[in-house]
Amino acid sequence: MHGVNPKDGNRKVDWSAASRDYALHRPGFPESFYAKLQRFGIGLPSQRILDLGTGTGTVARQFAAYGSQVVGVDIAAGQIAEAKRLAKDAELEVDFRTCSAEETQLPDNSFDIVIAAQCWLYFERDSILSEVKRLLDSGGRLITCHLSWLPRIDKVAQATEALIRKHNPDWSANDWDGVVPIFPAWLDEPLKVQTSELEAMFYYDEYIPFTHKSWRGRIRASRGVSATLSEENVRKFDIEHEELLRRITPETFGVIHRIDAHIFKINDSL
Image (cartoon, rainbow, N blue to C red; front, side):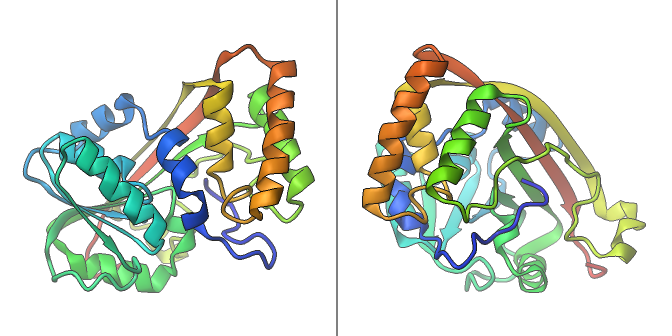
């Protein structure tokens, strides 16, 4: 999400703790998203793609299914373990590695595309841009993208967020206003007038289907719950969340999400 703080007070964020629910219940981007990227020539067969902050590899596996040559990196070893398992189960070839996105140790000029889905806010700006520039071949592109529910529109998301805040008052990613800027805030002011660096951007809304079970799992696999709370507190939250969903929504429902992407040409001016 744009404009979201990457930290929740002094709480340590451990994505490995959320890995199992992440692998089982956290939905990847819908097919419509990849169809839009392909119109820009992204996600093509034999294209060399690096997926930063890959998590359990939802983006990396989808690109691999299209025939791209994909590497996925993440600093959380638990996430990479699940990513490898899921790729093996799907008989997809992806090179998953546990490492920092800012220091991948991958060869220079080895990718056509670098993508960061749901994770750009966690990186140190100058370090990650330097690494992306090093890794991209001539004419390469960087994509930053998000798949975010809209609590100011969707009542289920709104009620769930209120419950997360009850159990984790430090959680700062709540009440997102849904604003997707043309130029993301991490760009310096001088770059904002150099529009040739921003090749394209888009956003649109889509309902993502859930059941009570899958939405509970999706929420457990979030920064505000399993990635920061103790196992006992996650259990207490989940019991209350189950009761909440029984009151406010049928067993099968959709949660409206905003999907966005920015596509950048990376050159020496960045």
